[in-house]
Length: 182
Image (cartoon, rainbow, N blue to C red; front, side, top):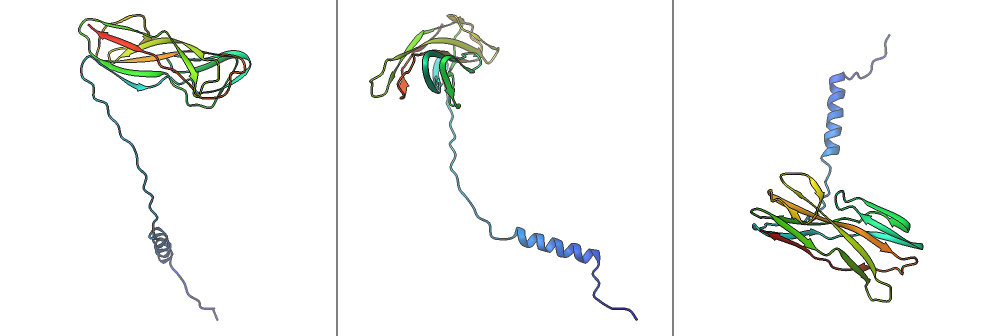
């Protein structure tokens, strides 16, 4: 005499598995809203617009002086001497321009003095280096002239000299980039 029980087919088991999965998926959902920012810049011919500031980033001043350099061509940061970089947050300055019929001349500040917010510290000086690229070509270090070719992107990097034991604080300064469209 055999024992009788309930038998379930494989198809029935698959149906139960699918029903369980659908029940789990249909559980009440939670939503989260986040706002994003969208920007656009429209330029007219023979104009220049700043898109990024030069930022040497966060640094630790050691017992000996040092430097921090932002490469105008690559945007990379390097340090030497008693200056130690901390984290990211550095960038080369960037400007967008368009225009020029025959020639573009570029000039501007070759150095910038950074002073501490609130004073009380020796100012620091950065020497500046300019580079440019065009939508029709690559990027290169920039002398004083550029042949126009579509949209021009100008990059400013440089080397900041950090004295030994420079007091902590936020340091800033301003510089000028002048582009003449001829």
